[in-house]
Length: 109
Image (tube, rainbow, N blue to C red; front, side):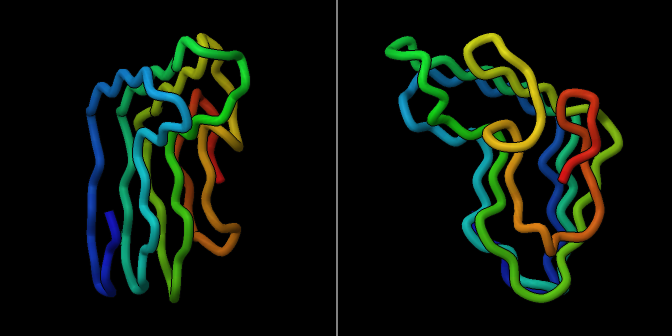
């Protein structure tokens, strides 16, 4: 989902169960500021069944322009091959994004 300037989007309370190789559960190729993005309460389970190479992504904001603020007070549970963690591949966003969301109990980015 690409977001134009002055967007307010909430991705909340979803259950995503994926089995495809090289998958990304929630993808924002571009978010243009000034925008707010709330990501909270999602449960993501990924297992391609083919290998143990973690080449999947849970939540990925690829690029931002301008001021983009991230919100999320309800934990997002992201499991890849049964493992939970933080950072890449569980959550990835440019370091210029403002704010945080919870991924597996840890504020991200």
